[in-house]
Length: 294
Image 1 (cartoon, rainbow, N blue to C red):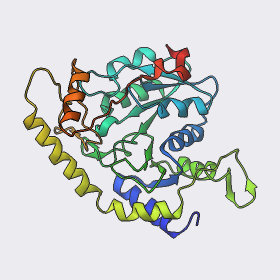
Image 2 (spheres, helix red, strand yellow; image 1 turned 180 degrees about the vertical axis):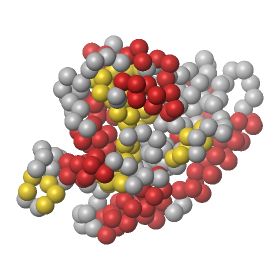
Image 3 (cartoon, one colour; image 1 turned 30 degrees about the vertical axis):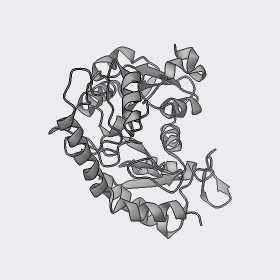
Image 4 (tube, rainbow, N blue to C red; image 1 turned 180 degrees about the horizontal axis):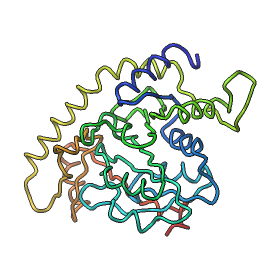
């Protein structure tokens, strides 16, 4: 079933959870970002600033609308986009900044929004890893003009398969996203926009409706585990991520360590029954798909 009662219930509940007025379910987190950019009519000839340290989907969404992703280096300790380096990348072609709330930690939004307001830019949140993360008391998804979430099974709030959502307080954007995600149609067989097919189906919505009730508990469980890491990892070889504080309330999608002895640490942990992965082994500008950004 498509666009049924379960989806309606989830969209309303997830919007309320994020602290916004509107939520529109879609096919994936990548689709969510693509739909937002499309709704804002960002396209060929435009530039969108994105963090250099992110999953490739952030860049792909920009490319899919015909715009150019412009990479901004991250802060070394937070891993998120460095606000001090944003303004130097703004040009007359810049239309938006996509901030990525990476690994469950929100980007430093206050200075970013100031820059966006100065140049008339949209602020789009890539919140694919930040379901429930908070910045200055507000949840991810409510911090910019619009936000894209992923419900890939491995996320803090994951579906049975792929899924995503756009959340916003902008009624016009929400309505346009809903139309774009349904073949550009508001009324069946009447197509007012060149849209695509990106809808969150009833099975995924029903599953998410159940899991959303447990999200706060699961996020707290992650926080408790992270606290054990902070207390237990005490040496000058391994650098832990920044902890939560009165501004950043992290939900630890992953707990990322830094060390100059990465391979040795990976081997040691594996020998002791602890699997790890690298986020991310190849940066976007070194991917063959984006060799033009190098």
